[in-house]
Length: 166
Image (tube, rainbow, N blue to C red):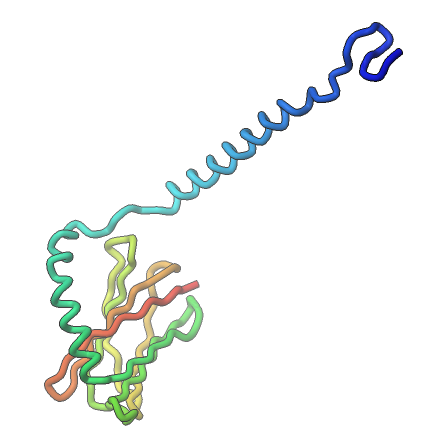
């Protein structure tokens, strides 16, 4: 008997498993893609802007407002503390020299990037030393875009931050 033959004289097929490796590889890839597609459709609610064209036209106005804010040199720092049971938004506002701006009117506009109908606004109250704060309760967990409208001494700026609420 020679190598590669069995008792009946037929050639042994040692490589029969190779085509099945390709088949099972494709099965694994298709299963992984199917899972990702399911979660993508299950979690994405779609675009939330009906007036994207009009909002796009206002882009130049947003650029002008950002340049104005940069020229003023106001420093805006914001943070969210607490848990789902009770959250608090705190904003620290200072001028170019680092002095606190304590007489500002501050309003925070919460927006969901991908969902409409959940937006809300909170007025922040002065806490002293250029700090402002307010409690709030977001209707959903996840990412929120917070736009701060700040006005003091005839000057107005808009600052924006993103927060993830667990």
